[in-house]
Image (cartoon, rainbow, N blue to C red):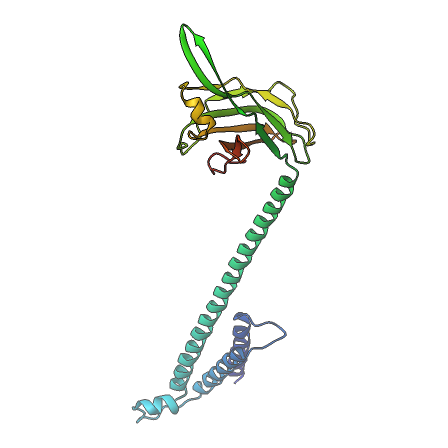
Length: 280
């Protein structure tokens, strides 16, 4: 009799531990966990009954085995408990999947927050960068005799710089080109490259406007100049300035102008072409 009681007590403790093994907090029971514990305790009672069960000689049909025989009833209860455990296991998997989804959402939110912080930092730096503007001299022309041949050309004598930003700019080089006629190439072709003198600084003061003389020109036919002056032939001037900022980071700012009638004569008009006016 003592052995049977110890078996019953052991099974009762097993039922309680099984409920805790499903993730039961020590201070709070959930309904499905209580149900599982009850089923396990019932199974423990059935085991105790089966130890004293007497099987009659005529016990042949299944209804007697399930509802009158303790061992058969225990088998039925074991099947029910196994089914309940399977259902609870599926539910636990569902909770785990939700937890993983929440973790993924949290990771995504953290990544977006980090990206926003990086963008904010870059924006803060961009506010402190130089803002360089360039103004070209008016289009000029000339003709020379070289090696016994007459040559006519168009040129821009110089360009003027100003720094409208809050920090210094340290110019490195300027690339430029002149295009007679249309259309412009899809990508700029900079025919000339000229470096700046060492230690030149574009101070953050719009009143300080250093100039750089340009040595490049483009050949034209001498008969084209009157048509250019009347705006019947398009002329384009474009350039790209490379400079370092106060953190020694290289940048490039590009511009494009079209020579045209502006109402009071011919002059350069800034022309927005994405590939010709990029800024980095």
